[in-house]
Amino acid sequence: MKAYIDRHRDDYGVEPICRVLQMAPSCYWRHAARQRNPQLRSQRAQRDEGLKADIQRVWHANWQVYGADKVWLQMNREGISVARCTVERLMRAMELQGARRGKTVRTTTPDTSAPCPLDHVNRQFHASRPNELWVSDFTYVSTWQGWLYVAFVVDVYARRIVGWRVSRSMQTDFVLDALEQALYDRQPAADALTHHSDRGSQYVSIRYTERLDQAGIRPSVGSRGDSYDNALAETINGLYKAELIHRRGPWKTRESVELATLQWVHWFNHVRLLTPIGGIPPAEAEANYWRQLANSNTSAEVST
Image 1: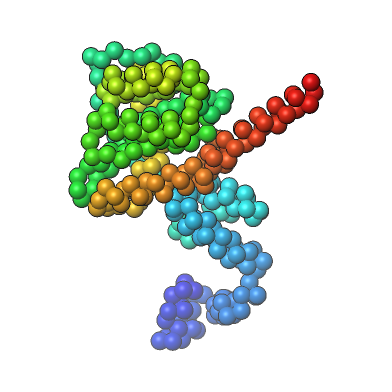
Image 2: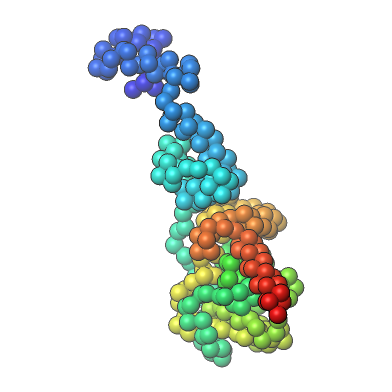
């Protein structure tokens, strides 16, 4: 009602409007005084204004995809002490909300005729260290030039994307390219890594299987043939679609998708907060692991 009076006070006057709305004029004049002088507002209202600026900044800095949970985590990481319910209340008032994932659409086609490796994961997507378990999958993107396909390779320990590729076709070459990028970047030790995928023909192909064997990587393929057998990779695909593709489209060219995917992957690995790994970015989780390992090795050397 106060906003209504603000808009029409010059035309009809404050007191006549208040009389019709059955509102005390003093209530409106108190509101108008606070609008002119913010110092007259309550401490809570004054603090809310400062928090709104921080919420807006964090939300915009993170691709406008964070909901109340992630905004609250990031603000507390920055030393801004605030309750989660306060962040949720203010985001609702500011009409800010995070990205929401829709229904997952399956892209890979199972090849029932090709021999498949055993399922060594059995839906247990956990790893005790980096380069112990990778998962792979790909998804699709609609552009003005036609369909594109985007493949990801993810290290399970910290959910870090270690390889990716954009292609106009679903042939084996493009998932192999994503794998090659991951191998070049990570240099995993032979016989220490398991690679898991669904039963898609690209991943059970002879060429893909041979490349895993050359790198000393144990292959693993989901045994049941549904999305739960590769749930972690499906989750990354869902985040990619919800946080980038669906919010930034329509997409015109392959080049625009590639550039945006590059930027999103860097943000995802180095900035995005992931609840399953403690509300920190994947790169930070891995850095913590290597730091703790180095400290434990140093302590062991000192003790001997």
